[in-house]
Image 1: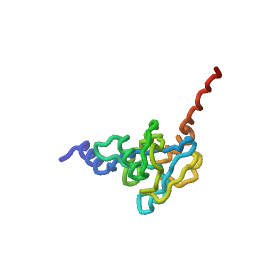
Image 2 (image 1 turned 120 degrees about the horizontal axis):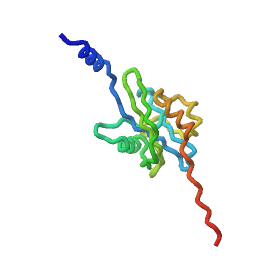
Image 3 (image 1 turned 90 degrees about the vertical axis):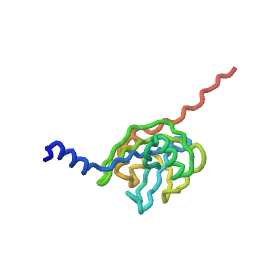
Length: 160
């Protein structure tokens, strides 16, 4: 006969949701004033909603490697990763996701909607006007509160 602790452990394992690490690219335009969002295909989970490009990490893959791979597959571009933002967790009915957001710039190429139905460059404030997956809510709040810093203007060279 099993003790209560073993029964709870087995019950927890049976009800544990699959967990996914998702690399998220917050791709800024060259002026660092607008960011890129992609509309999900309607036949996918949260279809028709807008999201930041990215995707699930594969087994043994680093978050940064997954980010670069996903962006090549989804947009056909190479990126420069500028830095990371806090991880956001969200529980959907059948899965748990950990979003790992990174501020990025397009390094080479022009973004193409290879895995989405549409791409759009928007100001951070416009994020609240778009239907986005619930997991993106904490990212939206930080994008509006703490958008990426604009590049510093070049220092003036004194007259000689």
